[in-house]
Picture 1 (tube, rainbow, N blue to C red):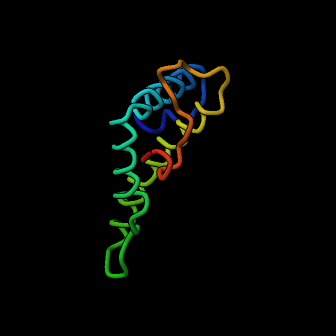
Picture 2: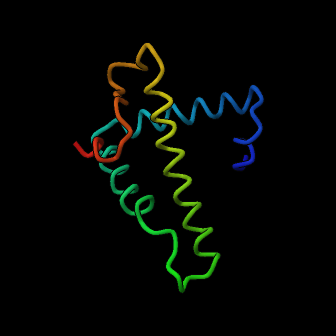
Length: 102
């Protein structure tokens, strides 16, 4: 299954998206996960997409990296908005990278 599965929201794909969101939330709710997300965000999301001398291919490639980080942050945000909380051990209270570092 490729990324195109995320575009077509039939019942099976909704299940895949929900599983993805649940896994992301549980992985990045741990201290190591928070640290990893902070590093990924700093390295990819907050870095420039391309320099003026780069080819367009570099910009497309970098934007792909950024979209993955945004997808992870989106999954955390989605799980934060659900009530009741997923579990007490999975604490996805924040998805802002500066808050995750704490």
